[in-house]
Image (cartoon, rainbow, N blue to C red):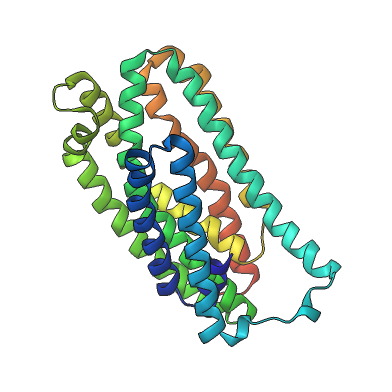
Amino acid sequence: MQSNLLRALGDSTTPTVVHAIALCLNILLEPVAIIFLGLGIPGSAGATIFSLIIGNIMCFVHIKRKVPLLHFTREEFRFDKAVIVEHLQLGLPMGFQSSIIAIGAVVLQIALNGLGPVAVAAFAAAHRVDGIAVMPMMSFGVAIAAYTAQNFGAQKFDRISDGVKKTIWMSCSFSFVAAAFNIYFGDDVIKLFVGAEQTTIIEYGRLYLVVSGVCYWVLSLLFIFRFTLQGLGKSFVPTFAGLMELAMRIVAAFFLVEYWGYLGACLASPMAWIGACLPLAIAFFITRKKMLLPQN
């Protein structure tokens, strides 16, 4: 919450530094707790919680010293129905949407398990590589959400239009670079997870990266349209788009995997991205027109 409050005020550097420090601390403490102290899984959990506490303290101290706008008093802890309703209208659909995506992943995993351990291992390894490429595109979306919310509050609609346009260029450009890297060098990264001798797993993993990489540009647009609409306070269409993602993954799990095997599982994510991106794009351009944003 503290990180997002700082980002909403335009400070993305401090949360990044705090998260990096907390992550490094966690990486250092987990081996100590597991290997040297012999605490096992509880030790790993304790190290993670301790790192999170340190990150929270760092954010709190920074806000206390340098961000007076976020200071509050005891009197401000009071029930405000309008504020609570507004936050629930935005927060619950976003949480539901995340749950939908998780459910879709579980359904796909069930279908994937039927293809055997090689397919499962290949999908898991490729998914890790895929996640590294996807996170920066999601970050562009998070950035445009904060930017949109700031300018929407200031009624500067022309800046929203210009910001979305430039973010699309940046995110799509990155998506092409990430796709090219994963397609041509992704198998080398997969070897780090499974070993160079696992040729079948590497080949399966490469197929996943090629199929996903070709559609990265769709995913980059999906993030931008989704987060822009959320920044404008629109929650219905992003939730509907999440349902579309779930529907596409179910189709892939119960039909494509049945007839096309592993390729069908690889097509699940691109299908979900396309199914979700279409309503989001339509809603964005309709909203843009209603707000009388510049069309150039």
